[in-house]
Amino acid sequence: MLILGIETSCDETAVALVEDGQRILSSLVAFQLDIHRPFGGVVPELASRAHLRALIPLLERAIREAGVEREAVDGVAFTRGPGLIGALLVGTSLGKALAYSWGVPLLGINHLKAHLYAPCLEGATFEFPLAGLIVSGGHTLLVEARSWDAARILGSTRDDAAGEAFDKVAGLLGIGFPGGPAIEAVARGGDPGKFQFPRGMIGSGDLDFSFSGVKTAVRYLLDRLKADGLPVPTADIAAGFQAAVIDVLAAKFKVAVEETGARTVVLGGGVARNELFRRRVRAMFPSSRYRVLIASADLCSDNAAMVAGLAGRILKRGREDDWSIDADPNLPWGDGLL
Amino acid sequence: MFEFRSHSPEETAELASRLAANLQPGDVLALYGDLGSGKTCFVQGCARGLGVKDRYIVSPSFVLVREYRGQLPLYHIDLYRLNSGLEIGLLGIEEYIDSDGVTAIEWAEKLEGFLPDRTIKVEFKFLDETSRKINIYNFSKEKTML
Image 1 (cartoon, rainbow over the protein chains, first blue to last red):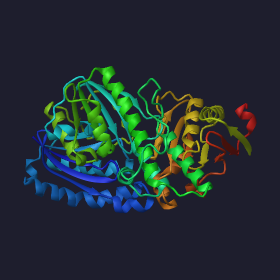
Image 2 (cartoon, each protein chain N blue to C red):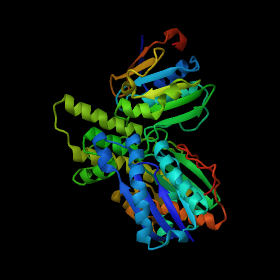
Image 3 (cartoon, helix red, strand yellow):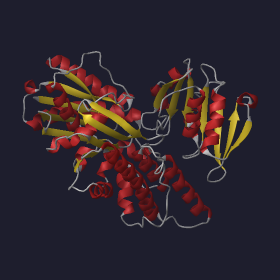
Image 4 (cartoon, rainbow over the protein chains, first blue to last red):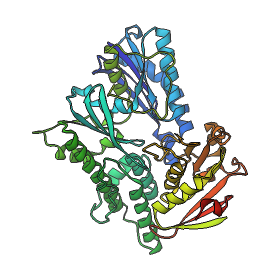
């Protein structure tokens, strides 16, 4: 079963062809970084226009690179949310148009569930109970799954997403966008112990997160240094900030895994590209007791293979969507992992 | 205009909650202040005052607009990532402003010239690490019962 996937929830335009929910035939991503970099963040209207420009050529290339005829496509999947409404609408419209004109099933996919599914594209299988952490520019979410059909949110951010904090702090430090890779690179030359930043809600007793405080703490520090006429030790600040965010993510993930009794642990989302964070999660859940599933870096960031892969699994179960399905920028989690 | 001194995020949220309990359909809150000055915290307090039951009232920086159901609908808009009046014009913010809900807009300076005269302006200034000076324009202090 061959599924064409389309992903346009934020600033990456992506198209992929995936067979049987697991074998990637082609997966293309058009980055818009150069468009957004001058603004220090994703500019929604620019993102939508860039999706429009990039999508059709990307689609043609994805089919060509997969080495298949378009008649071989058994279904069309698109990300319906959560994300930027204008950006989502571009992928939604194309998905509907293709499914309609090709006469194949249409599937609207939850972006966050697709992130969680990503390791399955590299041969991983889910065993339950499972605990997952999805960390990206727009989301920080802890999930528990008892089966494919029973999954619920254990905790989420109460203010900023972890990736958003990276972007905003990189903006304060003036080291560029996107903030995740910028901070990771600068932090390599820094001392994470030089500045102690707050570990927001680390002992709150629940599984929620807060990353607004650490961002504000960086700002205070910069103000103080400036007032005292001192140089800004950018590398030390970046390292200290990164350590604070990773500490909180790791601590809450550990509690979630212990509380759910999960033996399968899944990490996903763009922030999961962070090498220090990946190592921390692997060290925290030794392979003697846990199966730690973290997709390779390119499948952690936004891509369409995860969308097509999850859709393949859903279609195999006989579920498809009707033409009334629409983009939903605040799409709720709902039930299950599908 | 009246000035309020907040000594904690809780006080900022409490001020907002009391203010929100007196809001009318169509009211617009324009929030001005730097990163970390308390704007999102203020909107979280507004949500409480409007009886929004959602567990999470989070930063809309990523999706730009989040909608909540309370005694009045609450539209939480964040223009942090937007750049110009042109882009904002394309977002359809006027539909929120002209609605029967309450619209709270972070980084409202990017909307200057588009805001209606009735807009309640709220300015956040840093005093020290936990304290903020909050100036509120176009709203009577008595209504917040402070």
